[in-house]
Length: 347
Image: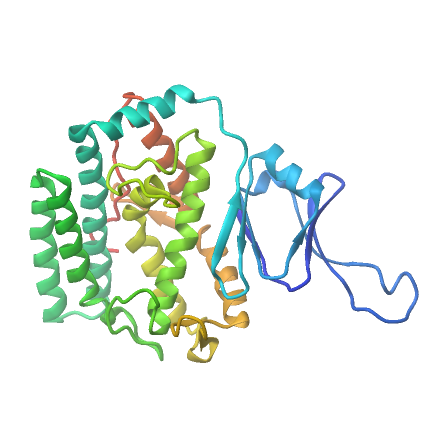
């Protein structure tokens, strides 16, 4: 359970006997001291956690904050409607030389472009693998066959891209092609009509955007823990408030992790149409409180599911994320070539 989300309104994350303890008030009113005692919802050993997410009106004690810092656990806050609010991360590791190497690579147009191409080529290849998985369950769809051919062509253009603007155009074209046929992956009550954002106009887009935020926040915490600066990327340009390196690494995991998770939860009816509502501020669609609880629970379990790469090696999603962060740090130091995560040809 490397990722834990606390969604119970009024719950408190505290420490008891050196372990994390989530408690809830049993309700006000009369009764004896025993009946008014806090209800223990969950106890978790610190060594089992990497990220704790607090959703809505959830409290945290000073001792819990200090234990998170001591054990290297990132603490993230989300509003009750799922909006990401911020993160408390442990102190920067003693890796000033790694951050200097990262900055030097980012300032080198050739080196930055080479890494950026690697991220985006993996994204395109993983998109093809996801579509092949859909095709294997629904053979004979000409739209997917066409998209697979086009994505192969986009991957060739990505490899040949000679500048960041050209690479950005290739990434956009490949992504548009991929999403144009992803609707075939949804077989339940919830359908996909195309990728749209800010604000998401339908359930699938709301789930995709939310999943990307959660995974990006998780990756940013892992990067910080490894001594890298999440704000200095190679494909995504630096921008105030943007974790550019986390977004870079996220590219190779968007389709194989978030997109497949969203299809799974919708097709298995874990997430249903009645679990969405209209956001009065943005006019977009968002999960209800009950929907958020189910989403967070399913997401935490999904990150612990085994997943195979193109070489047939099986790890959990969390293990793949940690491995890729470590491999990226080694590549930045010049100790090895960065090899991205790739799904098997048919997934």
